[in-house]
Image 1 (cartoon, rainbow, N blue to C red):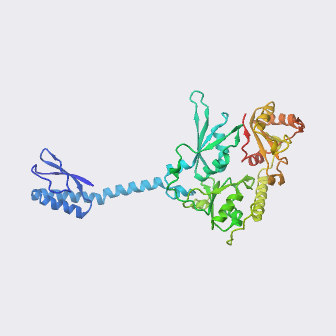
Image 2 (cartoon, rainbow, N blue to C red):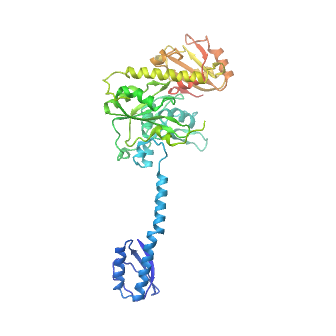
Image 3 (spheres, rainbow, N blue to C red):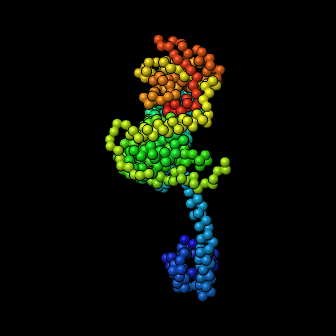
Length: 456
């Protein structure tokens, strides 16, 4: 709608429902609802012709309408086009986005709600950084917000973790609820603003698609495709790229030709050890385009420095091809790590304790805290981790040989050496403890998925 002010005689009467006159001092009229097309403006001129205006007044109104129409076709149009382009640029997703919900046009606020989880019963000594590190194995964490006590400045024992995609939130909810962290049993749930109504209107998730997280950075998209190919024909495999480092961010999506292959892959590959990291796998939550994945890196300037397969029959574990391929990947990653940076345990601040307990049946919620009480006699401890090995880990060369391993992470090397002297050969609950300094890189890889963590 366009408006104009026209000088006129005070005796003018409105005879057209298309006009809304307002008389001021008997001389001027404000005309609203002036059309944006020739036909509507012609209608106004016809109404004016029968309204009692003189010929000179009618010509003046006609010139005003013609001028307004010219503005609409030039200046106004340019302004509107510029505003439209600006909004499109604001809403344009960054290159390399792997987020089916956003790519499908979902409202960002709604997507944020289903990508958040509530984390309760948090040890008061843990910080935002601790929570971020523990929960990032399920996907990229956008934010960690913990409610603080204004009087003490410490958190109140609960907070919220928001992920980039809802699949990561679903995995964390399914996996972490009830696990021990810092000597307390976590309570994981959904925020209060999450309800059944939130799920309405989502693009339905394709049953052939799975979400994969905690993927070793050394494993490329084509390698990951090969590893999952024994379950069935892989239609697409995309990993979320980091446009700055030109590496993937450890998570993405795999889509099969049929739903049965996806269900079996999600069931058998979740918690599968690949590249010394424990994979996290589940069916997708939201539908939509997958995005380019690592192919988006092809659009960046250069830095300065197979055949379809049918679905596998039902089985109790990953296909042998997957196990064999994973072994090859593990060996190649291990060889690359050995070549790039030789292990040096002499300067390590990590102490490995073995034979402290008989097996996983002897592990209780207080074990890590009990070891911290003993270990702090040698120096300040940053973290105590109780690691329960899988059958596959026990068979791998270079891994601890006890079913239960306890790692004491000190803040300095001298404290670790004192702990080595204290614990090695010492008797603890009727068992002789074996202690040794442990390679920091191997420690980070081995304990990346552990949840029995105590931070004094």
